[in-house]
Image (cartoon, rainbow, N blue to C red; front, top):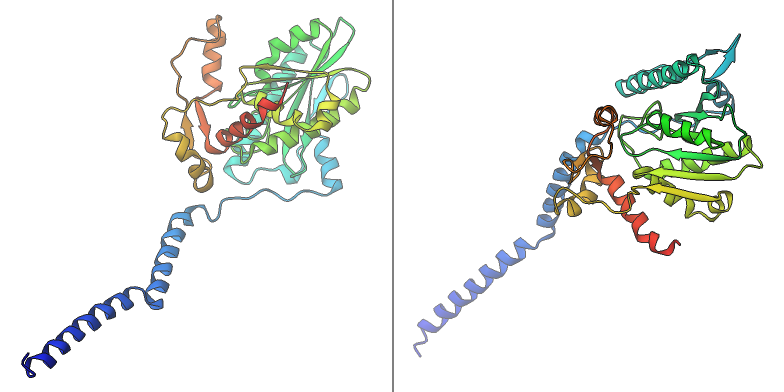
Length: 328
């Protein structure tokens, strides 16, 4: 081998190896990794920026404030009802204005029933541990003796007033009926149709149960739940303390399994629940057979309900389904 050629070839080979090694080292350098992390952080902040100032839960009021808010429904004079709205409940944002309008409509329905001579109708405002106000109402038997109590939980995108006819039938059979518009529904606080966590509705139901039992000691108590309200009832009775307080549970069309409009929703629902919790998915079967034979009831049902389901409620239903095989 020519000595003049050998050093040149070796140097060229060394330079080639060194150059390639240098490019690999530059690619995996700490400076490059830091820049990559900064880029990923910027992208993440850009995605989450619109949700940074989402309004949080209001602070829990003190005992004095709770007492004032519990006085939302009181009788005055000869059967009249005076609704006092404290300053803390004056709406300041659009969602609070919508909640106030829904609550006023719910109160008007109860007052209209009283004017028709239904003395057993009543309503009250129930304050949760989070400081939110829920609209509750009751139907008491007028002509028969009370022999039991039933707590009713409506479904998603409904309100308790839809069950007025059903409650009257129960009254005729001696049952006093209590119902609660859960958060984001009917006359209760919250963005219409939005539930930050279904566990909130479960804890509210437990607190409402304590209130009802305190007012009706000695009577057997039952739960009735429809659709998502049935899922709330199922989650509540998983608590042994709640199960010990009730005599039975009645469920209609319980939401223990959700059929999404597309299989991809199964994957996207948890992601949307984390990033865009208010996004709502359409249900799969909106054109199925009607559930009412009365045309007027069917028309009213379409005006108060919608085929929407957000990711958080979907996940909550899945958790109920996971534990339901252990129930008998």
